[in-house]
Image (cartoon, rainbow, N blue to C red; front, side):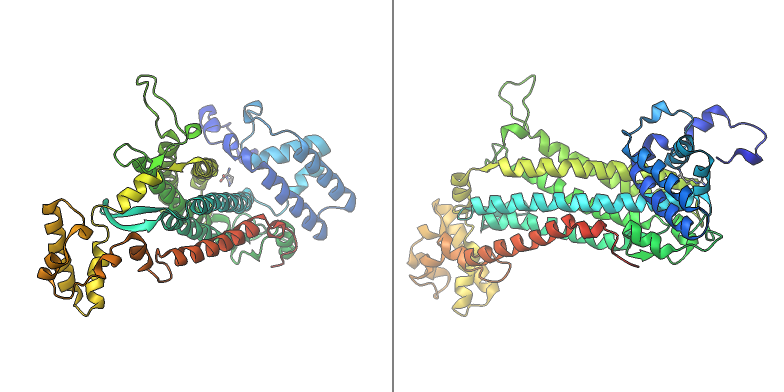
Length: 471
Ligand code: ARG
């Protein structure tokens, strides 16, 4: 491919070591798609005759139709770009070499990677929509149930189970939004940049972009051939997703312990112990939590690879590929598992209800009762705190205290105080957008369904990958 100026062969160990075909083989479909588009503009540029173009496109079609090659069967191949060229020449003869006119592997790899990331974003968006839908379905299944919420890992205030699940949906939706936003900057065509300064001939880059579904054309050839911040941004978006999945997995595992007893682990997503016959372990959750390490590691690897690179292409950039693939695989595989887990999981609503109605989770609502009667919040807080202490001494809840006892702390306590302590009143008191009042949660559920439908639609729209987008 490049050995003309060399007198000595490469050191065999170095030769094997510098190859990327073992992993960039997964860009084969992208490499072929980009080559097809490039062949067409070479025809317009006068490099190919009509017959040559037909022959090149025919050869590329034949290549595309073959089963995926095993890189081990092609020990002499350096990378996916060389593979396509070599196989094309074997199929159609020396005309195949003409395809490299004005083109460089530096821009080819950038182009392939952008196609790969764009496709991965679409797949992951669809998978996030699936996950979020499973949460919404679960929220609907348990729409009348209550549970304790926690701050500092201590029981705080009662919330609807649906409100808790929708909190996670917000995270999935933000992750989807980050990916969709990142997609706009990914979807820029580098091809037509040559090795660094440009292709050295006139090329219809707009036609290239249109054929490959890119929304814009890169504005600088040096940047286009060496930029990987589209990858970095994507890995950061994936990091956020991985973090959220990990937090969720941790919470589910915690809630499934006998100590909490709120979540019943579904058997299809749990494993037993070879040593302890009674065990049901949350392995699916633990692996999802563990995968976050890979994704965060991939982002850190890429940042470290990029941080010392002067312009333009440097072979270090080859090291940016494997972490990208690993992170994508981790998330693409974890999301359906998380979705299946959510569809199958059950909650112990009796325990949830009991945990939500004991342990003074209505104390904040009690303080708000006094505030409504004109007592400053700090003073109300302290009065209810004293009431809690008395109830603890007596071994009862706030509603077990006598009105006279309460009046000792604040004269504003009246008989209607006992109504405000009821679970329903506590929930209803949070009647703001974003609050856990049942009416608000019903609205939030409907809104979430809508928002998820928008992502599924955009991820599945064939137009996103079509040729009709012009730069
Ligand atoms: N395999 C290379 C990579 O992934 C392709 C580009 C090689 N370019 C070069 N001038 N050696 O980065």
